[in-house]
Length: 120
Image 1: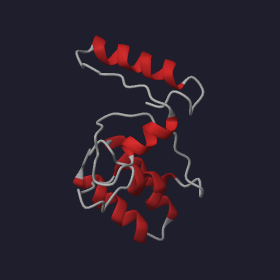
Image 2: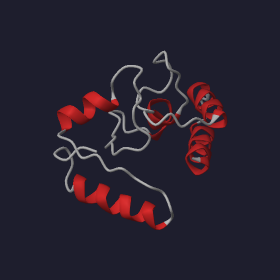
Image 3: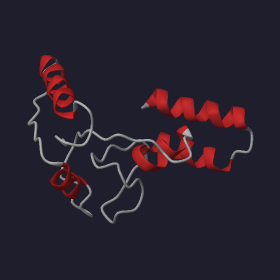
């Protein structure tokens, strides 16, 4: 986790670690300066993290952009979701993402985006 990127980033990660410990998930908190942190989690093909803190606001402010950028499956070639560093994968969410991209009805798009977020 970065220790100098977001407001209260270290405190947030310490709290999340404590909450995860309460449900039996062991966390090795690794606080680092942002330069070292981003070099580690964004290293091409490395993916040496399973859970991390990332602030995300797509420049279009469209909720759809979270799906291909953060939530779609990736592979070790670097294809797929560029910021899915934990490697989480759900093929149904990938299918919904593909459908949203070609759907012209805004209400249907919003429904599929909602379905994907709900599933995640």
